[in-house]
Image (cartoon, rainbow, N blue to C red; front, side):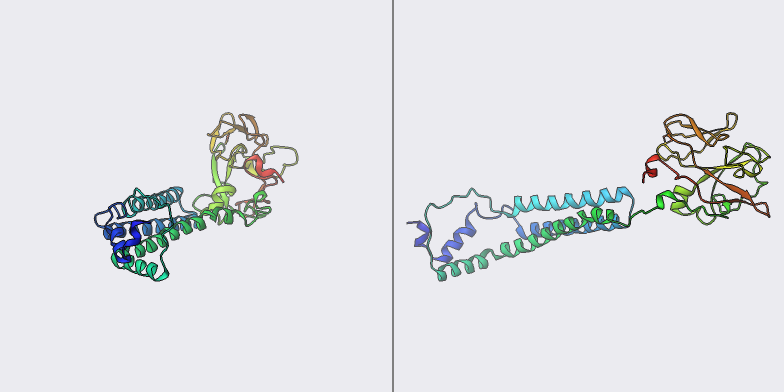
Length: 311
Ligand code: FES
């Protein structure tokens, strides 16, 4: 027979509360409990913040900072909970059943709650906070999946914002006149109204080069595309999409600064050096009655790296 069977429930509860192996190791468990609760709350807020940052497409460093700090705080709180609030042990399991009747067990539980009840409440609250933090983590973890479900790009990768009649404008939105560029000059242009947009900066950017004062034909079938010596090519490199902004005027080559692909602007920007697999798409131009440069249409082939071409 166990020696505990000779003791009253209150005495047993007293034993549990006074046993150094069963007591929390922290000197002041209430203070530790509040500190741990604060770390869980802060971790929860940071993980929710990560979800918000991901949803609004915030800067990458904010994603790393919020997720990293949130998980760190949850981990710190969990370790502190185990280290300072849990009974220290060692624990010895009784080899036979301690059969107490219902009244005895109720009295025992009441005594435990009375003498060390804060521990039970504490664990419920901390468990709730920890569960909330991990639940929020689980919810934000599926954000990438949700965002990748749509919308479908459809044919947007095959088109830009250039349209029939689009004015060519510079970075400041000023329309380009046929008398603006001297022979040998180069200018980055956009379809009017997109120069300040993310998409304009990404797929619409175009290099305008003046090769001569006469109409210039780069390839058969493009006899009308280069009025007054102006030719225009997509600025997105067909290798990996870097901006092809360097112009070697003497050799009439556009050079990509990333891997040194070179495009001959006089023959349709066919690459003659480097890893670019295909020419830069050429934008058909015309000069309107007021002398402004405008697009005849969108590009006839997709701009940018080769994989965008796959259908
Ligand atoms: S991105 Fe232009 S050569 Fe690689």
